[in-house]
Image 1 (cartoon, helix red, strand yellow):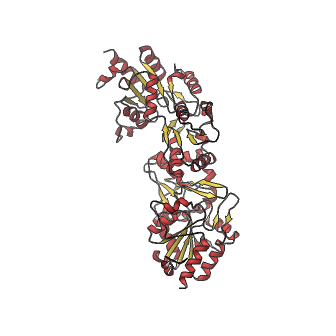
Image 2 (cartoon, rainbow over the protein chains, first blue to last red):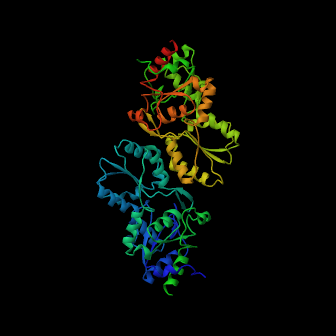
Length: 271
Length: 271
């Protein structure tokens, strides 16, 4: 019965994986891997299926992020990570935008090549402790002083779960600036369609042969389905039982964790 | 011509005055009185018209606030100030609510009589520098952990003007918590109808014989008009020329400052 309703998984050629809440639970202590996930990543790769990590992580450069994941036993490389900061850099360059950065200090190196003099937009990331009143007010004053304020937000999550509890995510601060300036932010990162499309391009697999696996019912599951992908929700990370009655989004299936998802998909592939 | 269209002012028996941006410009340096406003307050009192200050100020107790105003030359008393914190205390007591306070430290004494053990709601004020990530996250965690989260916001202003520039107001942080918790805050303070009604009760004059004078087109002018009052916008404080093309709110008149408003109203009273 485990494979019931999973016929579509036979056509899968690539997996997009959310990271926090799927591979590991983040935390001030560095976080902790979720049981079975490192082995699941190895099995995906051994099977010949393609794999790409699709994360809204903006508290570290991809290089530091991958270093942390490898230390936890995950066999992943920088090229296998699709993250908002590099996507934002492409957008800034295409449009000739010079950002004021309100992001985590550890993310700043991702913007090393970008001209930041005389800013004509604000880029907002999950700055966590750097979300002081003074820093938010500085971003607000720059925006309200622009003829056409441009606010680019690296994600719009409400909150995420760390090992010591829930944490406010960048979306809450995006809403604060949107309200104060009476503007609407442009979101780079999940659930933006262009972000999933970048991840699929890096995965090298069309939407109908890809599956997204995440713990966020709206951002991961809803976002991926809007792009024509299948999407699974894991019952780890910030998953809450009430997600299973979400009024708008219904995953293609629930799985207890990444390991179970990989078990079932690989079984289907062998049928 | 100065009195053209002001016939209604003959029926006025009481004035509600916004404070910041009408009597003085606030600032880290203590602020500075607006020219002519202290004399205008004296003339209102000498005329026999009633006067009540109607403020969303939540960075100080009313006692400290009045002390500051008196030092700037304003002849006002604590009983003449309607402010959100005392209104919130009445609401908390009526509904048996025990607040967690995320407010400016200097406002805390207003809540001295309120039971704050084992909180079942959050009260949000203009905490300014106290809006750290840790403090906002603490309020968020309390709310998201409640079966029915109750968020009471002391105002919903976007921003205000201090002598050294614009400052984010409580409304921005209210929106952040509303989004993170998927809830709607209850607003105590302008433009809430119940708050204007309290101010009118303290003024002792019915709405149709009262006029509100403020610098905020939405919160002061729109809010007062919704209660059946006349309302004037001053061209001081955070007034911006674009306010004169506001899509929804049109004041009964514009005046350059409080002194001009009082001149015209007193002239009309003598006709």
